[in-house]
Image 1: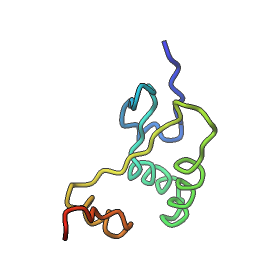
Image 2: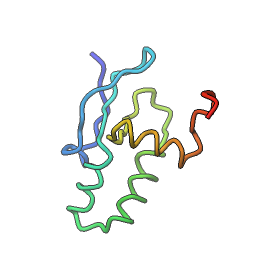
Image 3: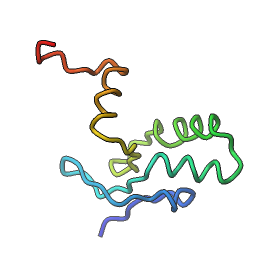
Image 4: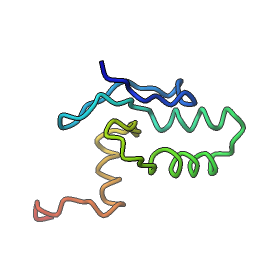
Length: 94
């Protein structure tokens, strides 16, 4: 059995287990719930976002089963996000 690295601080934000391209299993955490956990500890929202971004999401220690952090959104929000991020699909001739 594979030992899945878990982040005890974000136990309440645990979403499930993920697999991708033959990799995994790895722990999956909900970003919004991670932020709620940090804010419940008295950390202001802007600092919580920065902490989560730098200390968890952007952190890579080479572990092939490092945790995955997800952001839930609707298809409508994904399309808007793609435009803001410059990822809009220009292949449709729009």
